[in-house]
Length: 300
Length: 300
Image (cartoon, rainbow over all chains, first blue to last red; front, side):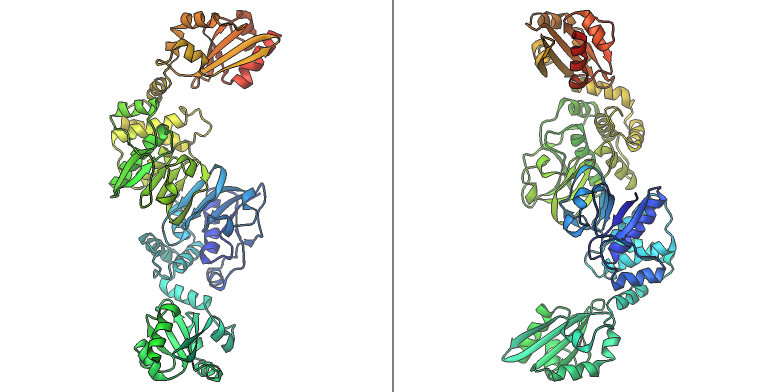
């Protein structure tokens, strides 16, 4: 039976792509391996798989005694396949903290303090002098751009950037432009209604006697929200809140577009912007640390 | 404060030498590190340190909160420094099974299924293009020859042999000849009396109504035992056992020299040898699986 390679439960782009990249690497090294996944493919990873024409790893709902496995992008029982305690872990490739797994026999472990598992895999391809095919390079690059949030994450290292710089040549894409499209697709709100988006992550506050609601969504598909600004306003204005702010947060630009029920002046005061529907509040990404305190003082 | 590098408690040659080799490597990479040890230097490692003129790592009796550490040749709390739970593990380099350590932050871990930690360190020197000085190469080679029992251990891999092949050129020694001298010194019985050696690991058996005692010592310093064969016989013959066998086991030759109270014929029958004092019983290394059953049937 093939050695099973899988990332963590509720797999992100790194878990999906590292299982596939590792599968290719190990096959080239003569091993009988199979990439698997422990959950649904999310939209972001789906974009990468479709773009580079690679099939998703096979879904498995657990492992059992006798199975030989390679863990990528995780190293904790709680995040891994059900039954892992009974299987034989041959290898782990990861970039997270150490999670307390015990084995009965020696194994290969490679953990590095880099932004993404695929950065480690890139180094392993190089060390073993194995050429990375175009589609695998594309997946690896997708994962690194995802995990490092286009290098904005504090976990980003020079090794991640070096890997992407080499991988984008092989994959034939501009990594940043490609990643923005991937994030846009991955964070698309198309399947949600106006009401669902406003209430997706919504909290209510009392500010100086005013009943204030703040909703926040993280997306890079900003246009599709701003294009429906009037529909959002119709719904927002129909609510019973004295003030309601929907913050559409762009994690790459690191700021939020604001659609609101309330006075323009309050928004102007709170965020030092020209108060108008859809205005971009630069640097405002946290409800707790920015939206709430700023609005509270502006309402005083 | 320097980052502390140490191997396991009750350190063997690999734990001592890997802390020193790792110290040199990391210093060359610009890190402020210090090699330490968690216990006494055993005679085998002492031989290597003396031969290559390197001071032993500093003894520490534990670590505390705020200490930053690199673990070599082990990865379990139980084998490591007291207080390790409170310290910060920055890196682990090892070749054993995974021992269940948990960390709060990502770290570098390098575990490979090779015979010795110094084989991994050798690869790290190469990957980082750092030249290995003669004395460090000597220590690394000592550790690999020790852990692999001059390649006789089933844990030995091609990677271990490749490392030694390169290291012996740098160290300017013949690895096998050097290792035999190191083992001889490390397993020397010079400090023990005849009586202590016979009783060091002694068990009594009833075989067909005969009271039989079997002592076993592992040493490569065979000559110093055989030179005193008559003194051993004087003591052995003075005991009340019907039969007493002292097996002086040579782990490299994989057999035992036998000094005994009893009939030559029984020894001849039991081990298919020419029964005489000091005879070498080829392949006989286990008391439980060979000495006891063979003697029992010969006495029938």
